[in-house]
Amino acid sequence: MITVENLTKSFQGVSALNGVTLDVEAGTVLGVVGPSGAGKSTLARCVALLERPDSGAIRVDGTDITSLDGSALRAARRQIGVVPQGDSLLRQRTAAGNIALPLESAGVPGPQRRTRVGELLDLVGLTDKAASYPDQLSGGQRQRIAVARALAANPSVLLADEPTSALDPETTGSVLTVLDRARAELGVTVLIVTHDMGVVRKICDDVAVLEQGRVVEHGKVLDLVNNPISRTSSALLPAVDLNPINESSYDRVADVVLVGFAAVGALLPEAAHRFGVELNIVGGGLTRLGETPVARFRLGLNGERSDSALEWIGEAGGAVQRSLKGPQGVAA
Amino acid sequence: MRSATPWSDVFSFLLEATGETLYMVGVSTVIATVLGVPVGVWLQLTAQGGLRPNAAVHRILGFVTDLGRSMPFIVLLVALTSVTRLIVGGSIGSTAVIVPLAVGAIPFVGRLVQNILSEVHVTVVEAAITTGASTLRIVRGVLIRESLPALINAIGVTVIALIGYSAMAGVIGGGGLGDLAIREGYQRFNDRILWSTVAWLAVLTTVIQFGFTRAARASDRRRHASV
Ligand SMILES: Nc1ncnc2c1ncn2[C@@H]1O[C@H](COP(=O)(O)OP(=O)(O)O)[C@@H](O)[C@H]1O
Ligand SMILES: [Mg+2]
Image 1 (cartoon, rainbow over the protein chains, first blue to last red):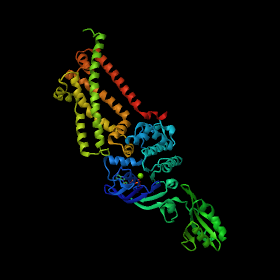
Image 2: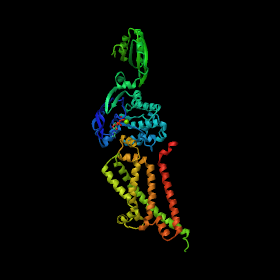
Image 3: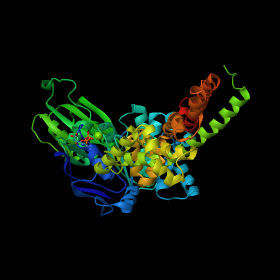
Image 4: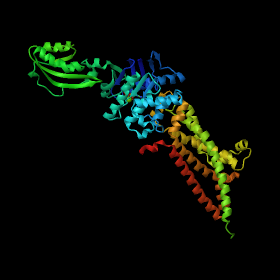
């Protein structure tokens, strides 16, 4: 749906993007994460057509949009809904008036405009705030109106730069829910720039890690968490080494990642039962990636058939990441 | 010692002079707004970080604007005599004063407007850009609409300033309240006319100021914040 190819951009000789290549499949949510100064906003501004890259291409449905001008540029901008970083609503317009802005730019006539604005207010759950001015809304409500505005002209891509950075956790949830509904109900392709891994955990299908203007990791969140050396897995999964353990009390110590209800609920008890081993969870915990429960546990095993049990867990769909004690590399 | 001018005469003097002042200031304010706002918009568009940055245009326009602003009005009044004659077909009277008043006020309004427009946050402007809005639409719907309260106040400031400048209209026979106070009041030692005019000017400017403040507030949606 949207592909970024070898994008570079520098400011006064200082490179901000250093050959960024990415793609977002239609109808999915990509989270672009990375430390401050990594180039996330620069990437977002290039995709939003607010900044022209020095080289490279940005394709939406196959068409390169980086070199457009005039009315073609404005038409392309309408294809990409943008939720900018920070407060961006017109303070002299009502919530409904703000949402109508892209429709006015597109020349949509009044009656159709009102219908569409009504649908969007409904989508973001703020129908009762149609006539309110931004100063009368909370930060989370303003941000939801900004999302509604970005979606007004039926864009195929929705781009949000740190949409939750100024919000408390509860309000963050409401904004993320709205972004998720946009994907589910309108089928838009979503690109979210964030430094908050919680955002990735809650709504991203894919993740790209940006560091010093380069993509250092890019893939499906559920695949990356299964990869023990990925930055994504270490950032997203519960830490396993919070409490020091006495390794000498176990025959084997290993870390295991379990994805999905079945694996998280049943795999470990079944392994213990099947191989007659004593299996203790000595670290780690449970989290949720979107709707999927995901666990990372540190296990301490006792029993003759501990290695077989670990191997079986790997074959049954768990990722045995690391055998800290005993033979290495019993991986799925 | 002659007897004081009867109050009825003072009132008719004041009435006539007020009419002249409002005519001169009113028309020149309209002209200065119609021409000064575009100057301010153009200055802001071409400024660094504006919608159409253009250092050369911005610098030249800024130079001319500041030159116009630094010109003492009395000099403009005299210097523009021939231009005035060309435009209004004469070089004396209230109508003739409108030309230098308007010319003096255009750069004044231009700078005020640019400063006000530059206060609109860049995120708000960029958000509008991403909706695919044209530059004209952004100027009207975002820059001007978002700063309307401040712009209305700026026009009020201009009106008050022009009332002050118009006091010098007497130099070319323009009449008005300032001229009344100086010629009939001060120069003829007529204290009743002098102080009546001064008091009336104070009332008039206060009322005008109040009117503009109210209009600015009425245009400002943000005042609903605490509702
Ligand atoms: N307009 C600009 N002018 C100069 N340098 C910039 C500009 N925008 C970004 N940069 C620089 O580019 C780098 C990446 O910035 P940015 O994209 O904002 O990072 P992030 O959003 O990941 O924190 C930083 O070093 C920043 O200083
Ligand atoms: Mg940023």
